[in-house]
Image 1 (cartoon, rainbow, N blue to C red):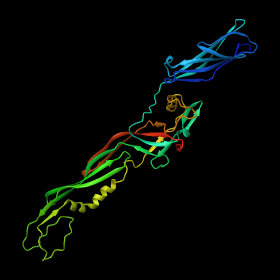
Image 2: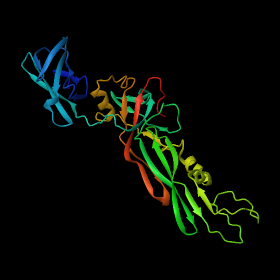
Image 3: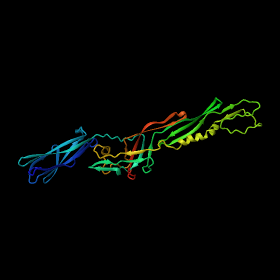
Image 4: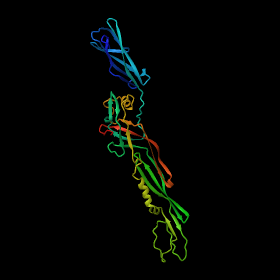
Length: 343
């Protein structure tokens, strides 16, 4: 303003004003300073209300409404007009940014997720009244974040071994080692096996002049001599098959029993720079949070990126069996004041 101007200063208490669907009306205070030794007859700002006057300083309040705006951000002009006692008028104009918040963040709790307890407020920082958040990583072997799993569970019975009972090339019977696989909601694998089949009796012919002794592979055979009595048949029971194949059975069970479908994983929270429309500010505004404490205990945020989780096992002849179909798994961070921050 020039030295002989009527208005010496005109400014708003804020330069960015946010309107939300759950807080549709918001206002700013507008201060107009009149030059010294100038007497005025009127001073006005369209749609604003004069709320106080202190000597040559006038303070107005101007309200804005969510429904009056269509764009996300509008550069709003505000003009004051002052008229002195000599009927000379003067105007001054300032601009503030009106931000219409259309919520786009999705914080719906998913059906399946991995949850970590974190002091999220320790990662929040503020610039010009707008929050941002510092990033960090949690890995599967970190025990400081009270990790909880909410994964899809599954069950399937799979043939992991087929045993053929044969006499020479003649197939007499089959045995199947069926393993019941159970996958819990924490990703723990349980394997319980059962050999399925019936007893099989094999016979041989009596060859005169020889010792004839029938046995199954895996049986303990005595030392044969001239006085050994003939044994022209032998019965193979399910228990015999289990004993014969015990090493292979244990290898199958040890591969899966007490193991986890998730051998390793990590949760990555990317840094979020302060921005009126970022998800953190949307969360704050939607829930009516204070800038000094955006998260209360048990507040949860869902990270945007999902991991496709599935589990398959190969059975007999390398045939692949799906126990858990491909399912999106999200990361969920739950705030607790006593938890460590993300690093």
